[in-house]
Length: 191
Ligand SMILES: Cc1cc2nc3c(=O)[nH]c(=O)nc-3n(C[C@H](O)[C@H](O)[C@H](O)COP(=O)(O)O)c2cc1C
Image (cartoon, rainbow, N blue to C red; front, side, top):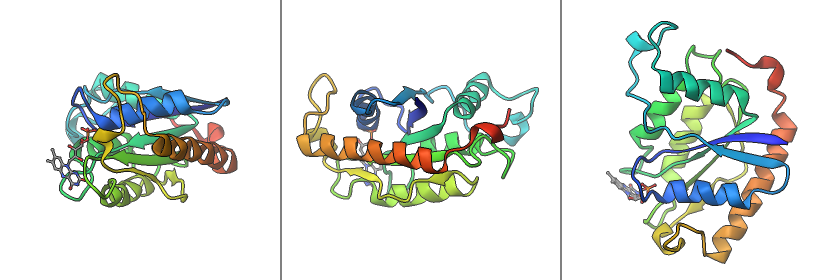
């Protein structure tokens, strides 16, 4: 069983990215289990609090969850043609100590949903960089871009667009293959 930790980089209750992540939980093939971590309580990064004594509890829990997972799956919106601060902030906390963090060597998949026409393509480029800097292994397979996402979920938040569901299922299959290929991270886990 491959354990994937997923988080959505949006705090709003009706978040399309959270719905996309929840759909991924339902679509995942046998052998891939996706757990969702709510990042709502993660404060803004503050290096003064990023110490063993002062690190906020939600951050400690987030880092532990990443450490225990075999892979990461991030669903991010796009704000002003880039990566929203909420997504980046969570990654910044997880990325310390630099080059020796829980993200080092961690296989990662990325996806995003937007109401706009470009499917978070620009945001995902920046997300790739943000994850690659702390040496996560971002899957090179093209990410999953969901445009006009508000038309693709029903009132209960279920993904009702067949084409998107097919692409999501395919993406998760590739993620499983990627984790099996590069994901020997258990030995290198950091506390
Ligand atoms: C401040 C702000 C900037 C945005 N900029 C973009 C953008 O550059 N490109 C885009 O596709 N959507 C943009 N949007 C629309 C978001 O993609 C849309 O609100 C999306 O639903 C946010 O994700 P969520 O539903 O997970 O919260 C922007 C929204 C906000 C609030």
